[in-house]
Image (cartoon, rainbow, N blue to C red):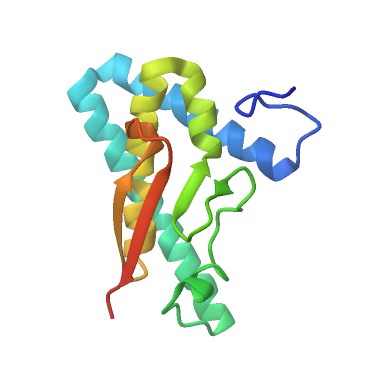
Length: 156
């Protein structure tokens, strides 16, 4: 039986790329923390993720403009969303994630992997906020919860 966080050649390309991205992030963040210390390292990681998120938003907005899509709800957001859905298992209601591909990778690296992963999760505030959505996340797997729960409102 395949462990979810392990990369296997027989998986879809999207799934493998997602796992590789999560692993790459872990190793880069780990080395930043080791080189700079926990406080400064966390600041640098968060600053890099903020810039990465803002760049992703700008790219998705360009695509929306090219398609003539005004992103005012989730259906329209998902027409330009850059992240594929493979590797995530959602719950019965919108905004509930039972299995997160990135979390499955990061938990292989123990407490440090989960802690560094929690910084990455902050990118969701940038991605959704960039389109006028307000995100409230009462549960997060990287903060010890059994699932991720995200509630959204749209700031018109």
